[in-house]
Length: 203
Image: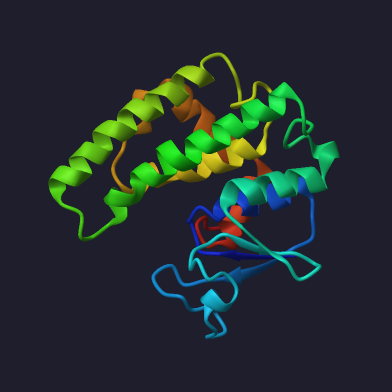
């Protein structure tokens, strides 16, 4: 398999998941601000949508959209318990979290990274993110991970998205459960390895 990624982008979540699953994969870097791959080729030939992540499967198929890729990875290594079994209520709860992260958290960061966004728009985005992050903080009270005591692909995604708060001056220390959660996930060897591979962590 080959994961197309941009350093620190949402593609970090399947990168972590692949390492957690112990699957063999290659990395192919896409420039964050253009459609160019490291070899100079056009990324849109791989994914016409133009954004990462994209996962090239061994049979030649291309899988896109983070939540779908995450669940595919989890199902390739069921012994790692990165997702509950398909058809279970717990799996539906995982999908519930993945949908919340992608639609309510991930997309809410967009104005904060948009150079053309007005200050009013950015201020409204921050206020909305505060409310949505608060809900996640409440859910993490008294538990180690989103699904309880078992690390899942939802945690790969949540860690990736919340890691952006450091780039847009959102202080997670306001939510102790979240600050502790981020430290807990960041300490995982697979997360450390993914961050180093993407040049986001020195050493």
